[in-house]
Image 1 (cartoon, rainbow, N blue to C red):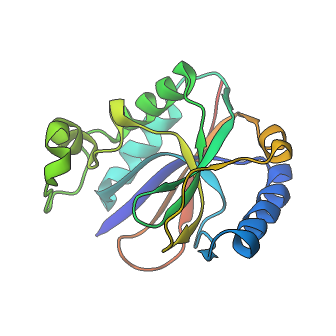
Image 2 (image 1 turned 90 degrees about the vertical axis):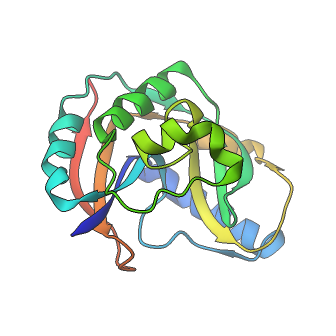
Length: 195
């Protein structure tokens, strides 16, 4: 069986209400936006389809990561991919180091299948082979998906109160899984605290 595994930084509980209010504000004023299905708001560190037996390797590898807490600060609202609306996070060496530590646990565990490389990503063949996606490794772009829309929009500035209230210090990461293409919600596999 192939599962989709997602390693992410969860938001502190106190930020959920503010983020929900902002999402509702975008829905009513700016965008026809659907909520994020099947998972609480989070900052994705790595996502990959893996054979179920790889789960123990992922769990053990993530347990071995020795990293200090990491600060996250949103920069602007952007459209990612064709439909995701996300808060782009300010990049930092600490975030990139954490991503690479997590990505290296996942490296080369991609369930083999069609790894078609789009023409626009021909320069990322090695990244796709290693991480199963052109958007990880050196191409990682830290963001928090807050919803989905079919509309086009320009990047939106964050309201000042959201910018100040959603900064947070991450002290753990979570590994979740769902059966690939099942439409089911993710279920938590484990939580891993930073040093």
